[in-house]
Image 1: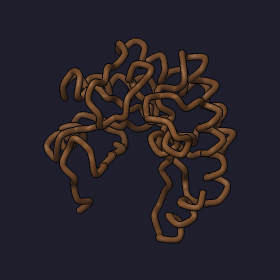
Image 2: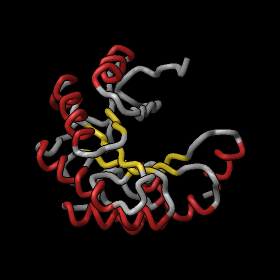
Image 3: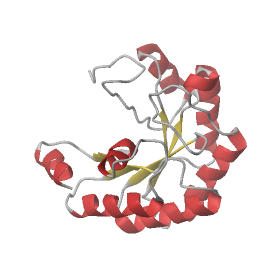
Length: 194
C-alpha cells in the first residue's frame, strides 16, 4: 500500500499489482503459489489507499472457470479497476523466465469467458495475457490474442515480445488497448514511451 501512495504522489496514472511482487512479499517464488484470497486481500489494501485505478495480475485465475469467476468477484469486491488472466499452465512461471507452457486455446478462452461473465461492473477491465510468444511464436500469439478479444477481453497483454517490431505487429493486428510489461531482466529490449 505504501508503494501505491508513493506512485500516486509521483504523478503516475495507475498502480500495477504484480504477481511476482505479491509472491515475493510472501516469501514465495513466482510460480503460482499465491491464492485468489491473498491476491484480493492485498489488492484491496492497495485500492483503499489510492484514487488511482489498480490493475492486478490474477495469474491463471487460480483454477478452472468456476475459480476464475470467484477470483473476479473477489477482485471486484476489493475495488480494483482491471485484472489480467494468462494462458499459462498451472503452476505458472514468471513471464520473462524460460520453460513456460501454455494451455490449449480452448481452455484459455474458457478462462476469459468465465471472467467476462462473472464481472458485475462493466467498467472492470478484463485483460487477456498470452505467454505464447516463447512457446508458439509471434503469429500464434497474435491469433490467440484476437480470439481472446472475440471472447470478450477488453485489452490484451502479449508477454515478452522481443522488440519494437513485434509490438508494432501486435498493434496492427489487435484493435484494443495493449498492456506492455518492461522489466530489467526481461527477454525483450526496453522501449521508450516516445
